[in-house]
Image 1 (cartoon, rainbow over the protein chains, first blue to last red):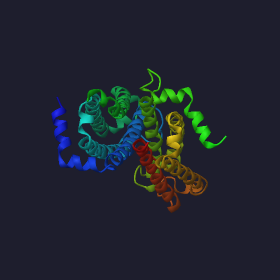
Image 2 (image 1 turned 45 degrees about the vertical axis):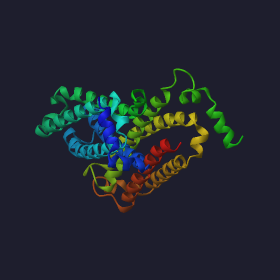
Image 3 (image 1 turned 90 degrees about the horizontal axis):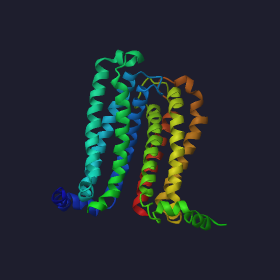
Image 4 (image 1 turned 30 degrees about the horizontal axis):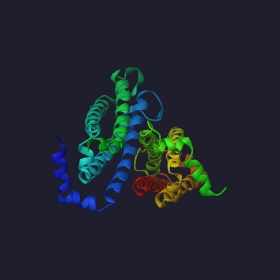
Length: 166
Length: 166
């Protein structure tokens, strides 16, 4: 059902420009990976800290305050480079359900992270002391880590599953 | 035994054939190993960036540099080892092609430079870390952080380009 739309995007002059300049996609992908590194490592560091592993020098609220702004910056660049890649190769992206699963999971994990950061900011003292931390913290840590891993796996598998749908 | 015959020997290993997808049922091995490579390299680069940015003074102000280094280094090395194992597995599938590829060679030149930079930092500026642990790092340390960032970004760029040029 997305095929006609994808074909239209592919025919636009912007998409044609990206397709005709062969360096655009690999360069965009490389920037994409750099930002995934920043985002994924930051997320994992916060999540492990929530589970009581590592980063013992910093409290949860400190760590969140330090890292979450970098996560949003990285996500902004990821959306931008992702859009460039989608405009350059719309058919490859839109036909595979893996792409849509990835988008759904990004929306999910971003919402979770917004809610988490807001809760930590609202009541830092409660989050910083191990004993009073809400029990949902562990669920968030495990859930969001798994989501980020799944998002990265899906990202790589878009390339390998598209062929089955075209 | 010259380099070429070693490369040919590696390429003819049963594992190499499986990664190439030569045998029925192994078609998905390359994407799976590649995805593991991506997951592990995100942690290598992400954990290095965290220290580099702290050295440059762009993030985590007031965090102890020696503590951050101590906490991230085991993750960096573990992830690097796993990335090296998955990377070698990908390499042997087309050893001759990869070894002759310009981007592939550049990737390893940059990684070697990053390694030298790390050693110079560790046995140079880092020895006086006690004097600037919580504050602004001296010029030599900031330079090491900046160079590390540049070399590792180059590693990722060349790595991604290998996929488009082989």
